[in-house]
Amino acid sequence: MFKVGDIEIKNALLLAPMEDVTDIGYRKLCKELGADVVYTEFVNSDGLIRNNKKTFKKLEITEEERPVGIQIYGQDIDAMVGAAKIANERKPDIIDINAGCWVKKVANRGAGAGLLKDPPYMQKMVEEIVKSVDRPVTVKTRIGWDSDSIMIEEVAKRMEDAGAVQLTVHCRTRQQGHSGDPDFRWIPRIKEVVDIPVAVNGGIFTAQDVKNAFEETGADAVMIARGAIQHPWIFREAKELLETGNLPEDVSFEERIDTALRHLRYEIEVKDLERQAVIPFRKYYSGYLKGLYGASKVRQSLMVPVEYEPIEEILLNYKADLSKQVELQDAE
Ligand SMILES: Cc1cc2nc3c(=O)[nH]c(=O)nc-3n(C[C@H](O)[C@H](O)[C@H](O)COP(=O)(O)O)c2cc1C
Image 1 (tube, protein in one colour):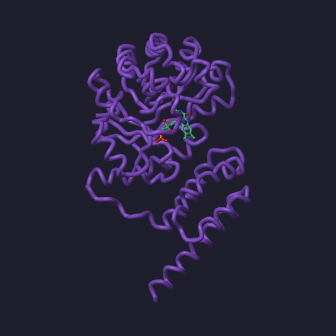
Image 2: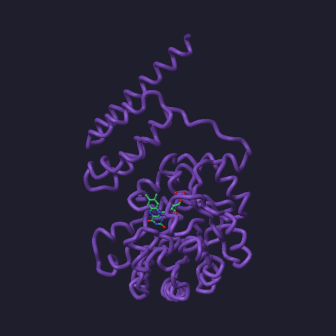
Image 3: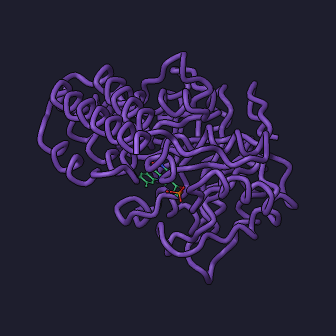
């Protein structure tokens, strides 16, 4: 059971924190498509305590997306405590500590997965944060720094002792980055040493993967990152599979296109300028149009406009073309 503060969900599906991805618009969409809990991207603790405007924007959460977690990261305990207090004022359902980021500029400075190099320090950090806020504190980490230093059982125990109320484990080492097979065998071992709920993360890309991950690991929750960028329906589909045992039908081309446009409108709503939503949105088209006839040409044409209207025109024309093709096929 994913029991965190007031949240209590069986087989919970979590949308992972993702930098430049899990903003308000995207979180709203994933929520509509069945994500149980969503997270902000990681927010830099130094930026928060220095009052950086851009960093503060990342803290914004809305009522409709609850339960929502704010994730913070940093190396320095005082800065992290200061950042946690600021995050706490936003009243998120969860304050999550990033102890898993692998990128050099974060991990080599002792933040993110860098915390795994010094578990007693990581414990102290979480302890101090827990003492300073009234929201539930959770931790997202990896199984270890590299294959020679996997000590996730010790880390998990330390996190529980520090007062973290839930742990998410990306079952790869820092050295693996995002590649190589995640090792889910650690999850049941972790669950033997702690009582707090444990979420499994890493390499879960389909509804079937979600079901397998629950069955193989006994985890209380599954956290999905890249699988949701490629296919945000993964949450709805996984729920259907878990509830009925049946694999859901493919998402129709109409729904793919309508969802892409709805998602883009959500992004525009929260950005100051339309182009600030339209340009970064280009990364989603390969997922939204996956498997559709003639998609690569359409995708190319979507790389040009910087405003919503021409994008809508391209996509609605494409939808009409695909409908005509279906009619022709039916007539044959
Ligand atoms: C674009 C991108 C941005 C990410 N940003 C964050 C982040 O801000 N905080 C975090 O804890 N993990 C971050 N991650 C890691 C994911 O949350 C997740 O742990 C990792 O991608 C493995 O899950 P997956 O195999 O489902 O993608 C990011 C991953 C990606 C692909």
